[in-house]
Amino acid sequence: MSASVTITDVAQAFPGRAKARLALDGIDLDIAPGQFVCVVGPSGCGKSTLLDLVAGHTRPARGSVTVDSARISGPGPDRVMVFQDHALFPWLSVEDNVGFGLKHSGVPEAERRATVATWLDKVGLTDAAALHPHQLSGGMRQRAALARAFAMRPKVLLMDEPFSALDAPSRDRLHVELQQLWADTDTTIIFVTHNVREAIALGDRVIVLSSGPGRIIGDVPVTLNRPRVVESERVVALAHRVRGLLDEADQLGITTPREGGDSYVSI
Amino acid sequence: MSASDVSATVDTTAQAVQARSRAPWWKTAGPIVITGIVLLVLWAVFAIFADALPGPADTAAELGRMTADGELWSIFGRITLFMGTCFAIAAVGGVALGLLLGSNSFLDRGLSPYLAALQGMPTSMWIPVAAVLLGTSPWSLAAVVSIGAMPAIMLGTRSAVKNVPPLLVRAGRTFGADRGTLLRHVVLPAALPGIFTGLELGWSIAFRCLVAGEIFSGALSGTGIGDVIDRSRATGDLTEMMATIMIVLTFTLLVDRLVFAKVQHKLRVSRGLVDTGLPH
Image (tube, rainbow over all chains, first blue to last red):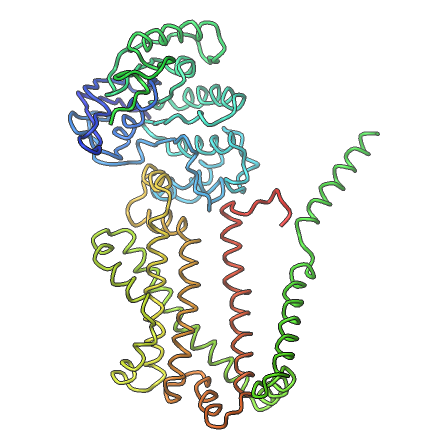
């Protein structure tokens, strides 16, 4: 199951000390069902805010967000979020964590157990089913979080820098595993990252955001064969192009933060 | 080394680590017993200089007498029953109302200042009021003890709820939990360690309140402590009083070790708050 996501002229702002600060402005985005879309941009460009809007955690200040042409009115199990910190419930075992959403959306016990077992098997955590999150390594925790999200069979999967806190080998493996899981389920994925190569390696399409306020400055289609890895030459070459787009807009600044540029904090 | 030697070494290493993780009984009970003996010796020395204070030997003899005529069991049983019932009511009511406060900001803003004031004030001040309003029966004392322990439990629960990481709440919401489910299956378990701290505080407040009631009037007595206090006051002999204090101390020690400490440890272990990498 998958759904289309349509974002029309969306703006979002947060109250500041003197005046509200615009996080996103004039975002227009059409995502086809089953598409894997990556969103890159400098820190603070409103990437996570974009996911929050689709997840229904917040409402846009202007514009509309629809999933399968239905306006979003709040969080729902059809749009599941994977967080940067695994956000597993520390008092539940891995198995119960993966089954949490299923249990509370009324899936019968037998069916739930079967689904949980399937997804634990797919992410290679069958032997860790009875362990608690604190007994797992960082990579295993994030895998459990992936299993928990995929087990819900969401129409849209929202991923907020899920691999950025992991060590490089774990991240490389999870890149491949995520592409496999996505191919198995054909769910729509919106994947937010600050890592340009990661975005190219995973996405069908890479949306490039600028910061202060977040605007779309690039929409790069990626047609390379899957599964892709971040070290592949073609991925690196395409990453250079995206990096160029960001540099042009004075983003991801490597130089001293200038007023109006990325990493300059104006409050 | 052959392959079987290697696996044998691995096995013994695993066994050694497993054995080390379980402390033998004398390592856990030892410090408690030794400290107890030291305290008894200090008490004995102090009793030599203070004439009116009965020493451990006299108190032990008195405890023997109280055991023989059943007074010890009567006091112990009545404390357990009285505190158990009152605290159960206070805990259920306090946690439920605390969850309500933690999740409803209107109620929280309205009630929390008054609860904080009630908690700061000695609950025993309500005892005369209850004695006149509800009569001098154990029921009136039970009401004060139950209600008196509630503000601490409510406030403890409320701040525990406020300290639940927002990320866990968002995770719960993203997996389709509605308000009720979120409160029961995410907020409550996440707040449980903090709620328990509030419960421990409520327990000690309840006990203080109980004894204050017994001192106020022997007629309010639900446990027999008040009768002992009355007799000691009349005769000036502290032996029975010291024996009763020992009974109460044993009771609170048992409750702490068998209930509070055990549950706290379990909560910490299941949440990964005990570093299992270190010997502890």
